[in-house]
Length: 177
Length: 258
Image (cartoon, rainbow over all chains, first blue to last red; front, side):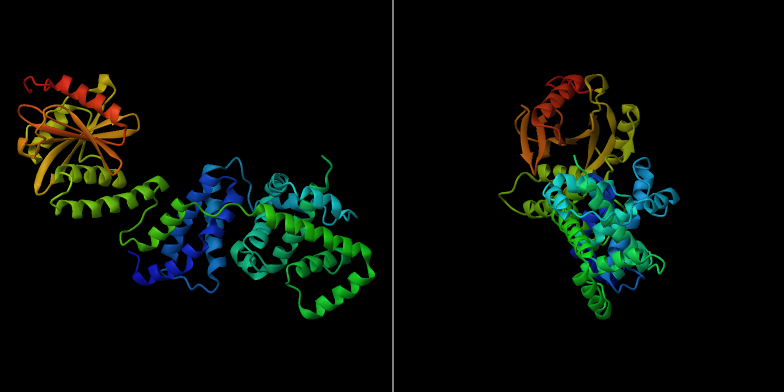
């Protein structure tokens, strides 16, 4: 049984962050129906965890649960469409992302950035660890240490993933089409 | 941060500056570098453009209301929650509303017939709990004895499988304090609950009559010995067709009951 105290903590922590949770789940799963299932699952996990958990940063804490739920969920139901963080091949792929192809033309990005569909496709095409770092930073608006908590990675890795993610995205958006 | 690759190190600091995560000392240092290095300034513009693009176009629509309600409901529930599909969560909300309506209607003199309220509430409850029957069987020789043992009525059970309504089972529906036999038929992925009533609770008219309550369709009719009410979430015409099929098969269209 869930105690009333846990329910009170749940109401204070989970419902206020449902939009953030949904956005993250959508970017991780790539699909709105899956995202709803993932967030609902995550909310149940959060309720059970709140029986004992000591939560300092509620949003990062709940988004970590959402992320882990998404990982489990995708592995279970969509195993073919997602190689996720921690996967050795995937991390190797990140190493090959050109860290800083210093183009002199922010103009090309500015033009491509007008095309919302193109930006979303580019973001969706990034390796998941880079994508999730960018989503947590730009869309959820998390600080570095919150991203570190949500993804269970050291801050140095978060910084490196953000830098690589942005460099990779810039490169995709600069490509002529 | 790598000490061996100054370019990488600088790029990490540029990103950190963009994210407002750089401490004061590093910020001053970076600003000095930016002043003297046009290429670094171009990199910063490039990164800013990427960041703005993601912020502008990456934000998707907010969580749908169904999800918002489901997430809020999880914290309110007193029962032990297991995971429920979202349409069902919406149905739970509807069920609560129906439950409240049933209570107020039962005590209101101008209310819809309490039988109708009770069977619709029962149908909603069964849908929400995903427990449509107390006895599960497609064999009427199994369902009928069970129903008769639990509700003091005749329990007419018609076999309608060849008409497209396989029997799924039976359950007891309580109206007031009276237990009544209910047959549960299946129609594609929908359920049809057919409750048998004593004549005292039945409709006066012998012709089938359909109604809608809280979005569920009902068809009611009365024969010589008993009255019936069928409830379902299939549409009214389909439910009427079911009622006609049942009456024909059970020989209760005015004829004798088995």
